[in-house]
Structures are given as structure tokens and as C-alpha cells.
Length: 253
Image (tube, one colour):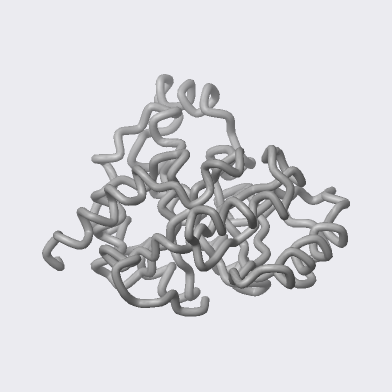
């Protein structure tokens, strides 16, 4: 990942002049890539990463590559191309298409809770927890292990960014306080080993202050990502700025 400019735009080491997660109409966003770029310019950003969700059967990748390239040529912004991919299971398999030509970033996400048999819906994980088939500590270990393995797989193709980590915990009914220091260190080590950044997601409001501070203290780079479905939300920070401000004032640990 290229280094963002130093200065007032980086409280707590988080570059607020770069949005690393802006989806377009290719995958559920309401704006075209050009509209997203104009919104980033209006927000005073210096960098925009267009990130659209893919599956194994995605068939618009050539068009996406061409549109992002054309948009980048028409602006002074640094415009990069990203794809969002889901962690499928505890082995860290990723839901990726065959054609990853010209991809700068892979945003690794939890679209379902990764279990051995595959990604599970929140309601199913709640049932497993309620019946004792799965306990919260075991679930968190599986999640962290899967995330680290997924980052290693992603690093074979592009710059990995762990997007909205632990965003599913509330949905499945697991208290984030059960995340031990050992598990967070394991995640940090996985990020450092793969050159991965972790995105603070505005729309999902995660990771938490505690997780962000622990990762930052370990040297993991943190980036801002709006996840905005509408161009108006690109580069507009509330939660991200709050986390960055806390990190700027937090003593190293």
C-alpha cells in the first residue's frame, strides 16, 4: 500500500483524506464510479478506492477494470481498484472470481460467520451457541483463525485489507469482550505477516476502539473506509474520526 500523506489529515495515524471502501453501482452502490470520484473530490479526499463485491460467478470484471481506469485518468485523485471478497470457511477460502487482473486491493470481509462447513447465517450461529454445539470462545478462535488464513490467501493476489472485522459479533450474540489479548495478537501478527491493513468502517461502525487501539499499537496500519452506498457518504467521517481521535490521544501499549 502506498503511504498516505503525513499531516493534519492523519489523526491517530488514520488518513482521513483517503476512503478505502467506496462501492459503486457494480455491486449495490447507488453511484457510478464517476459519481463516486466526484463525491470524493467534493469531500476533499486525495485517494479513493473503488471496492465492489464479487462472487465466484461475477461477470463484469473487465468492464469494472475499464471504468475505474478511465475515471482515474480524469482526476487528480489517486483512484485505485478494489474488490470485496467474503471469507467462506475456517480454512480461509475466499469467494473470488477467476479474473483478478488489475486489482489493487482485496477487501476481506465476513458476509457470513465462517465455520468449517462454510459461511453461516447469524440465526444459525445463534442456534449453535444456544444449544451448546458451539461456545463463544471457540467461535472467536475460529473467526480469527479464518481471518488470518484468508489474509494470506488474499495476499497472493493483491494488497489485503481486513474490512469491518468482528462486525458480525453483535448479530450472532457474541460479546466482543470475550476477544482475548492472545486472539487480538494473533490477528495483528497475521496482518503484519501479510502486509494487510485494517479498515475502520463508517457504515458498520467497526472495529471497536479497543480492537483498533490494540492493532494500531502492534503496528498494523489502519485505514478509513466509508462503505457508503450513496456518493454523498464518501469521505464523510463520524465514527472513523472518533476512533482516530481516540487513537491520537491514547498512550501506546
